[in-house]
Length: 92
Image (cartoon, rainbow, N blue to C red; front, side, top):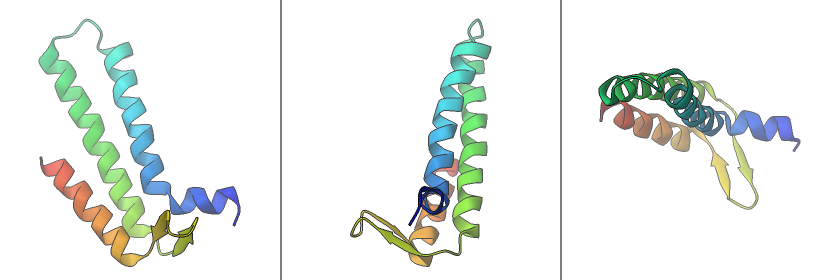
């Protein structure tokens, strides 16, 4: 299995990691002089968009894989659980 296939299997996790970096970048670069409430709302909006993107990637992933003796397992039940957890994260 090559690295591109591993990245495709871990696409929802990669999207969440990029989302975290985007939230930090938006807060530190774009909203430096704003109020705490405005910074919180912008971070929340970016987080919701990233969680939606990760949920779409998890829902659209039809590949199955088992990497490193079960360290990363991707199959329909785990993808469903990812979508449920991301939905709960958005609703919180």
